[in-house]
Image (cartoon, rainbow, N blue to C red):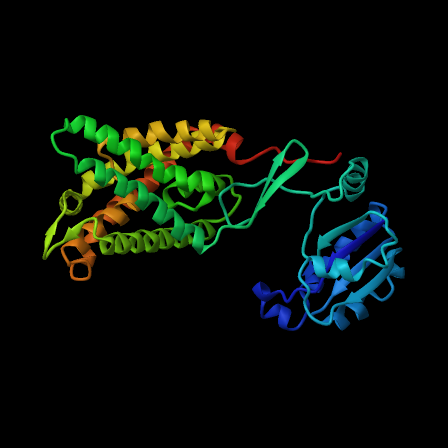
Length: 399
């Protein structure tokens, strides 16, 4: 059996260590990472291993030689320039003898049985088999979507673009609710119900097409409780997502302002503009503790909506799972930090006071954000088993 270990990376995240030693040769205990991998492959029946190298290739060549001391045949395939993941495999196509082979990165340590993975792959009439590990989502990893044993799609790991998009998407729902609330001669209760109904579209756009929303990511604290990652990593994710959501919300506020649908402070506001100003003033003047409590109640419902959405296997089910909790929080008058990132800047922009009164935004956002964190955490505490079933799929093992 043959395997390819991709060993040409620069290891930038492990600098300054990798400025001296290539990452695959860094020690784990008394052995190098690559040495542990080769021994594990040997124990699983692999007898010909290709090392695809680039950065500091000579170090790896000198360390392992021809592989005889490990009881395997080692072949070095050196890239003249970095070729990514598929490039090194392409270079080796004439040496693989048209037989199945295993490909792995040079920094992976696992107890997975490579022999059983290999046998599993050979038993399937497919060109490619991928070994995966199920983890908490959303987080800083790519996602593989499956149906049974088959991969149906691959989603790249979230980035700042998806956090900005989430702010924009929530802003779409928030603006639609402003439009509804500007209606005249309609019962206020009906207006609130309709506003909550259209506001839910914002979360639908976040969860179904895919984007990263701060309030939904509060569910990630379950991973902290289960010691899947540390507090610093969790806070870093929250901060990045929060900033991205803010940028997206303010950007949309500016575009909507310039579109003219709100009117202007000098020439006169439209009914929607009047509502935008009134809501911003109301939220800024809301007592801190009330803002905090409304933030708690809001994100309990938002996190329940996220759970219900992800639990569903159909688009229709996801829509209904999102709609009812979100409609309830809007009708009830609770406070959502990301929605307020749209409402507050928009109301101040219409009056030409965004920069002058920028700090006033945080009089609302800080207590509401803290409340949202507490609310989401309470859902994790109340429903840990449910969330684990949803966000952590059973890890596949070849035994």
